[in-house]
Image 1 (cartoon, rainbow, N blue to C red):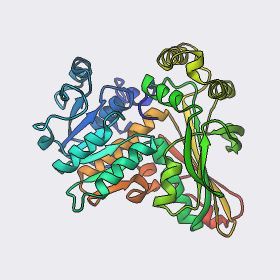
Image 2 (image 1 turned 90 degrees about the vertical axis):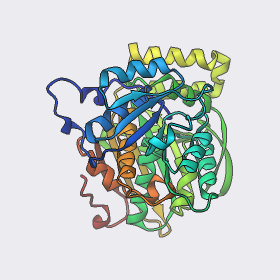
Image 3 (image 1 turned 90 degrees about the horizontal axis):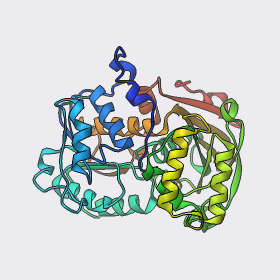
Image 4 (image 1 turned 135 degrees about the vertical axis):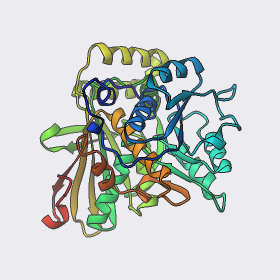
Length: 394
């Protein structure tokens, strides 16, 4: 989801008496990162993660300068608020020469921000979960010829960890005929209104995807599947949803077809979303009003935990099957950790110039190795050798 709010671990890392090693560090640098939407839920978590494990200076920007200032003020001299252009859809031309990496936590005008970074030679990181947004950015950078910087797309949990899990499966099973990607979100996590609005707007929406029978138009939540998630969640009914990973991995990893499925750890919440998809949220209430109501309800009456799980159920062309899952606490927090890791890698200039989805330049083992206390890999085998299924991450 594009933006979130969470009440868990990133703020906990700042409680008095806790060591900064609570969040592991991929490396220390001393450059400048601009975070668009940096006072929002994921953006603010990225700021705090970078404060803990890098020496970079951080610029926080958004549509509301006063809100950015209020967020930045107590965080010390390394964090400063900056203003976007008057319409909020572009960065001041005088600001970009001071920036090494721009992290975009909002979907609005993503292509314009990406184009500015491309022209200025600034690295670009995008946490969007919308396939069309990522497609436009990839096409923009891919058609630019020689470029001086990198654009990293599909950064977060879904997409992000889901893409990396699919690559993990490819590396162990070989070319995949199909992968089912499941996303189990904790209904007890208080997401930001932008994330809830994005989910509601995609309920019941049509999208085209490559299936085992060829390209097909699907409708979100119109098709369901029973997922098996081991001891953590058992059997759950999951629903087709338009996360971008199912559009991306057939292209980047030569997967024959992919499908992404969504549910919540609360069966009641999952069924509520399935009902809203059938009825259409705008028939019940305007999306903005329903967004606020759901955010309030999640904050006051949580119906689940803050844990999440993402799983890839893969089958190769020899019909060998295996399942690989990553679980953690706090989907928004984990999105921030992945984004912070990617940002730190870009600051060390260890990723080649050009446009890349995360699975093309980073391995799952790198991210899990950076955050072993927060992200764990689980392996379940069906019909492959035990050697192929062994996991050093445990």
